[in-house]
Length: 430
Ligand SMILES: *Cc1c(COP(=O)(O)O)cnc(C)c1O
Image (tube, rainbow, N blue to C red):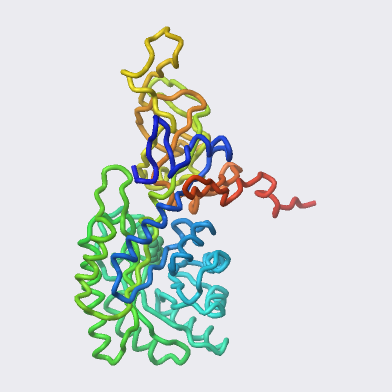
């Protein structure tokens, strides 16, 4: 467990706040974030990058709550966005447009206009066709668009295929061998200004090797561009550093940054990184309550009030999240003798932790050994990234509340949705 989620007197706390108090005050299910954990992760990056010109662009899609964006904006972060909507969130949260990089394979004309109006740092362009479109849109607005090409270094990230993005067969980025020709084309287009190069090879990487391999390929490209007279202002090495969900052993942020700096061997371009999961993932939990215990013929089920629409990762990638009781059973030595009138010891059993959604794939965790009863509170760990941001309203389930803890205070940072909000835009025909 991270330093910011810990047991004290058998109670699970976030910072100085018992999670049970948060459940009582805001209801369940809800996401709970630790401001200190978010801040700590960001500082680990900025400390490791000290002495070098850099920009840490938090990947907004990991968790786009305004309170989280605002915490990072106040620390001086930039942002990596993948839609016009994310740009509007960044601006609403007090982020600086001049520190925004815009990634994504399908930028629309409207999104390009929005970003050009806001004055972002650069577009991470992912195809030849996008380059032509961006030149035209910028020209129509009487502007010059700052561009970086997202190059596919063809490196195997050795992660889940759904979150691996840097192989030749991937839809992301431009092919390595076509990059030089595309840079030359970009140089010739009147409404584009080349600022950098970018790569992002995947997510939840737990080794430095693939990052170093990608960096070396990007550097070889930077050198060849220099031979063509194309000089870059920045090198963006993307995000993708993994976290510990279960038994993974990802490198520490400082070691990851040291490996990148080593591979950059003294180059002086500004370094941009786009971390998402590693900043938000272990800074949040999903708090849920047991509704029913059901003892089937072969398995025991704990049916909880959170479901796959609230946290999709288990259903989508069979991802593992630790699940801990908010209130631990007293240990055997300290429990009162049976019949002594004390709290009765609950039996610990192996449970399937499942939600109420009508899909067999609706599970939060398989085969967990827990001592629980109806109404018990559970914390689903490592849920700060790709949790709320991937949630949906499937089964007409309102999206859950979000709470940010800051020391001894808990703040509601997103209200629980109501059902009438869900169908507010719908109409019946006559
Ligand atoms: C998703 C994404 C990131 C962040 O990835 P993490 O694994 O969350 O660090 C960074 N850059 C781009 C282009 C992305 O699509």
